[in-house]
Image 1: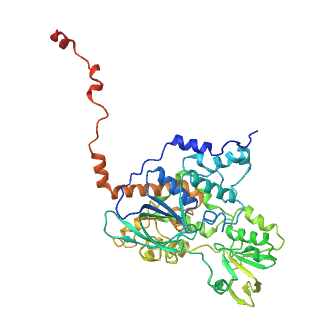
Image 2: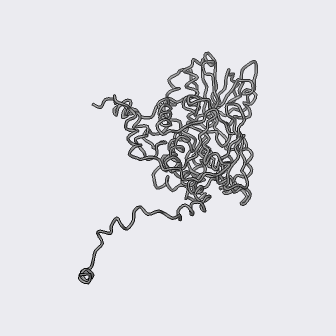
Image 3: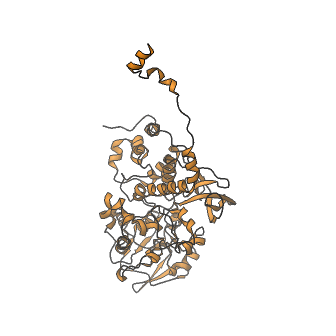
Length: 487
């Protein structure tokens, strides 16, 4: 029987880092007026993965910022995520990359034993949050909490291209500079939570909220709650409301069934996954549109979680026609009925409209979108996909009009706004293995070529010899003829 480790659970991680050797020295030349080589916006699983990968690529001058006040408020796992378990397989590669001793399995087994890991089917949400906190510590990733990127602009002139960053640090304005930006900022990173117009008045009066917002579920005890949407986040929100003592929860789905066809599963094999960015636009669009057409599949346990409550009610084929606020309630018209709710939760997804992000609004009109690049057949038209940015091989923004904003290539997007490009929700665990290395390779390439003259000088410089001829003079062969002549 395998028992939990009783010695220092971080021993194997420290040993793995020792055997890996120290990270390469920072090879990026410093430039006056440039504070950071890379600024990573977001410190969650993606931001942590980027920080470690850049460290191992010898790229220094990396700063990780997060608007949250501290580790407990950062990311979603201890705040807006409401599932019991992650929705992905437990053995996927995470922020550790190829260093498996820094992965979740090694971390979990060091604390609970191999049998305990074998017994779990998926990773617990709070376990994942604890692991990420440990990972940042073991890899030496420092996060500047309470720091928000407000806006930025390119700096013309200077030794190398860079951005002027307008930050808010603990509520105070601050200006810094960086050569590269990586947006690893979560599900709303390329837009905003989508709230149907018919709920606007209810949201304004505190009677409705999006699943991406903070919700006081304890205040819903004894209340009648509506949840609009049938993806995983909607079911999770419904479950928490029920577990918090809601009198009744009604979940409304537009479709006449709950989506249960995980189409991404059939294209997750290495050949397709690893070469996805090389596929024709028509192929990538087809897969993205098909995924959206069939719907996001909630895990069976998320559905079973709400079915355990007799006061849960499911409405299929039931889009809301109208809603208004009356007497402190939301009155909805659905399928010919008028239903009254004390609170409404919108599990209605997120937009990819860059203008809805304050820090991206200034560049929204410059960025190439899928609608600028590809026009699908009528049966595959999807305006939301069309609004998504069309990203390059390093997940960088591209110019809508060539020559107008070449500096966009120094902004890398790693959030679900890149779904149409990659076929995966960027930022989720399955995307880390392939796309974090792709972005880091592009950052490395760009930083090298921007300073190529300096690197040429460095690599062509005179190199002092490690030793002189005296080291081997005594071993030089003397031909016999030469020896006789000397005699």
